[in-house]
Amino acid sequence: MVSRVIPVEPFDLVIFGATGDLARRKILPGLYRRFCAGQMPEGARIIGAARSDLDDAAFRELVREAIAEFGNGAPCETQTLDGFLEALSYVTVDARGEGGWQALKDALRPDEAVVRAFYFSVGPGLFGDLAERLHAHGLARDTSRVVVEKPFGRDLASAKALNAELAKHFNEEQIYRIDHYLGKETVQNLMAVRFGNVLFEPLWNSQYIDHIQITVSETVSVEGRGAYYDKSGAMRDMVQNHLMQLLCLIAMEPPSRFNPDAVRDEKLKVIRALAPVETHHIVRGQYEAEGDTGSYRDHAEDPRSTTESFVALRTQIENWRWAGTPFYLRTGKRLRARMSEITVVFKPTRHSIFDIGEGEDVHSNMLHIRLQPNEGMTMDVTIKEPGPGGMRLITVPLDMTFAQALGPEAEEVPDAYERLIMDVIRGNQTLFMRGDEVEAAWAWTDPVIEGWKTRGDVPKPYEPGTAGPEDALMLMHRDGRRWREIRK
Image (cartoon, rainbow, N blue to C red; front, side, top):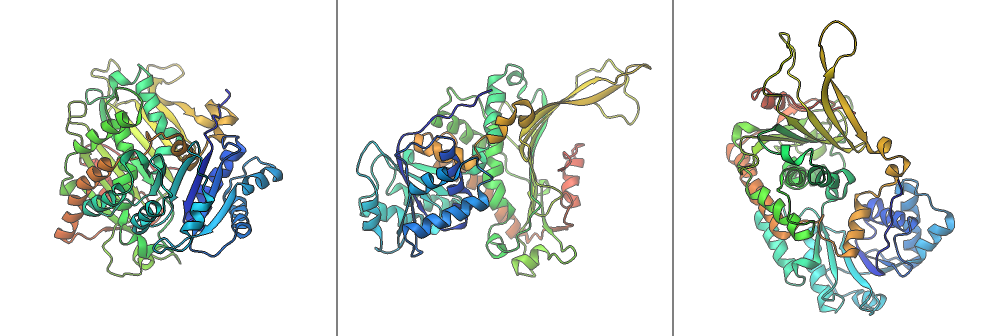
């Protein structure tokens, strides 16, 4: 199989916060890999902008070091790296003042044929200031694009305020709210598998699906950023955006066509159809200390913190397709393994012609969609166990791990940031969130968080290296179901 690399139009990309952690770890190394792949045209230019007082040479050296550390061994020769660095320049800019804006304007090409994009790799508190100054200094055109990073607010009120601030200066077609989960290869394959295969779409409903599990498990703690994380927690940091987006893609109706607004219209319908989460259908947790490694409260530097590092919940989508089918979501820090996976559990056959012994499990088909690590899909099917002595049933996986099924080229698939930034240059918003979608997600999330505060709930403690609090297991057991095991 030969993958196609389709070059984009010449562009000027301004990265605000270009000396920050996200730019160094993801954005700049990702752009370099696209340069190596031949996707960036010769006329592409990348302009770093931040408060740091650097010149072009110092910025290029910073980027050289970032690529060496975070470039994942991109197959480029030294002269190719030099060619990429030549496309970089730097301007010192004061986001809340007037310093540097004329210099930035001078660095941008006036040619209307050149795509002009601005990446706000900064905290949301600066979004409004940057948007205002881009227009005040005549840097933004009607065709310009602006990329904003999450968090998109911390509740419905702040999300509305943030959207309103951006809307003063840009229309919705110019705003790209980036969620890197939507750029993952397997996430996009959700739509291909569902809507491109007659095998699945007729079965994708409550008549045939028993339940769906979405798990995003992390092994890392919040040490080093505990003060920041303690103001958000797992519900705000992961469920409201990442897990919500996965839920939308797995549950949405087929769009009339594969274009940005058609896809996002269907995602919005899913969010608006989500049932409120009942008190006994949600579990929160905090990881405890282990050896010399501190607890969540140690890392948050608050011995009385009630912020969750783990959350598991059960919800339903109140529409014709999914009536009666529960969706189970869970995410947490310091768990057994790093894993992001969606499991679709189909109902067992209505009548089994085979004898099932006492204590034996009823065999069900399951589709496991693994987002990380080892992206791919497996389908559990029931077969006869080989050998004589009767009809004994076993479950075996049909494996479609991308690296095995698609060959070495699957390992060179662009990472999420690479794909999404190129989509910005193309003007394709399919994998980006719309403002009303963000607000609808907060409208569903806010009552859950407010309920915890009202009741004075305290998260359940759990041991690091496990699957979370025991109460999360009981959340499934009460329904006669089991979580998919968190495994490496």
